[in-house]
Image (cartoon, rainbow, N blue to C red):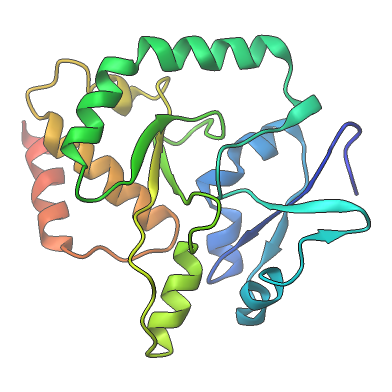
Length: 201
């Protein structure tokens, strides 16, 4: 069922129904009452590499590229997002530096409502879900870095500005976003150390 003014069919691929339903990338779509296809079958990733539209509407992943809701997002919301991005620019630059070996880019997002951060991939890059499927099948996946999108209204993200633990917080945000999308951490012990340092700090 398409919402009036909806210009694309949105979908998300995940390892399980629970992971798809709880994905941070769905937050703005849930807020707007936009239905998103939850695709959890292994064949779905392969199918979507060959299927670009359905019934005249383009198929668009909610976890890829920048979110453009077109007519479903009013001008005031777009202006607020631009202003937030501009005001947050100094912190973004520090985040990019702190995560230069892990994130392709860091930017302010419009797709998050309740979560502090999420990972997305640029158009043309392989999704994290597909990379995990290939790894499970014993195949090598191209080494591509995700983009970290942050929600400047979230309390954890607001703590970044002026924090003495900036790098630790930046990496915690990245690791939490990785876990939220169903990924696995390269160094779980480092994540635990960082979180514990924040809890007792």
